[in-house]
Image (cartoon, rainbow over all chains, first blue to last red; front, side):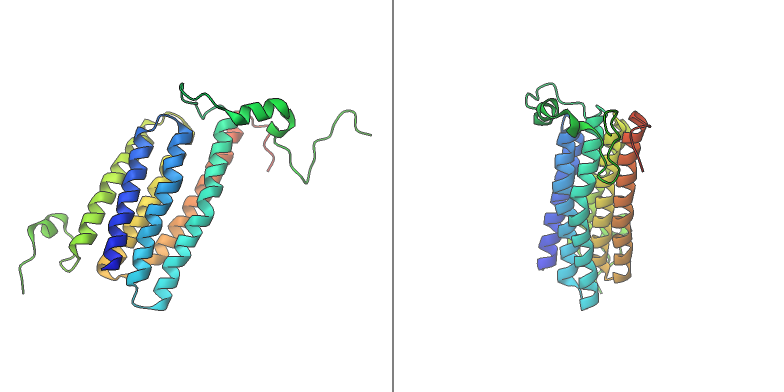
Length: 127
Length: 108
């Protein structure tokens, strides 16, 4: 019974995520729908499995999948957003007025570069 | 024994699958159709990568719903592997989006 409530709630969240993917005007807003509503929807469906599971091992697998989703969704979203922003593919909506990252990069231009900690870039004036 | 309802025959769902699972599967199918629409329309590669990510989440939801409806718990392993592959694919695509724009700047 509780599992059925989770099933309906989860499918509703996935539907909302899909609607957001289709309707929202630019990439970053679409990711806002996809990352949060999508992950929560799939997670609720997995919780439904965990609640209705006959054995502990099944429950553990469902919970493990949910935890994995929760851990990887922010990382994947961050990587896509970063790549799309720096290549100019994020296509900001024409009504967006605040771009704090652009202001930040004007103030500290070094932050926009792809600097690796292990291999710092060699400068011409370094000894 | 009661006769199998018509909608279960039409959907070719297992006869003992509860109605809630069938409704959930229908909602997930609608969601998947919408996401595929975005996947086809684009307009950029990053949009398509995001759509693929959501598509994987919807597929995981499909598997979870089917497990609840039928009790075929062996399918849960497929859900876990699907989550893993979707994550790796997204990371690889993000690297590719960056590499395509500036091949000399991205170091492995």
